[in-house]
Image (cartoon, rainbow, N blue to C red; front, side, top):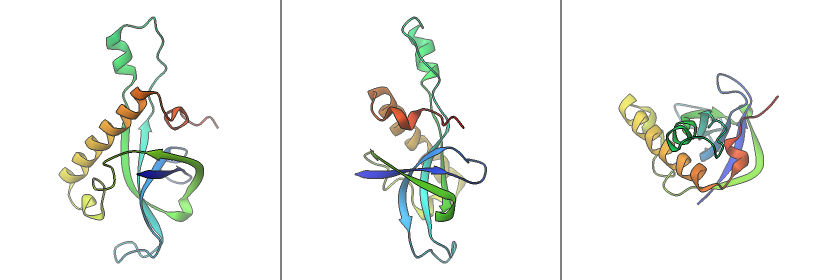
Length: 131
């Protein structure tokens, strides 16, 4: 499944890259405005070189994810897409109800993003914006 990538322009995660998992064009009762469920990268992986040990490479390749409901006015879509399997069912509106569900969803997103990073695809998504 292809997901659209975007950049958050406002708030705590401004400048962070996200994947739009579930768009809500009409809004909902809880959020009465057009919004999207997004999963993004709070802390990007550090640079890795060949000279580093395997343990150090593994430590520097970690990703810290976040999941959030974001107003359409606060995200800027990009021309890039990302193919990730299994994210569609993980993050839903019910996920944000309990902290434990949210943490489980974040762990699943983290695993999916780290696998994608290790494969070497979508390099743009895993580099921090410089502005």
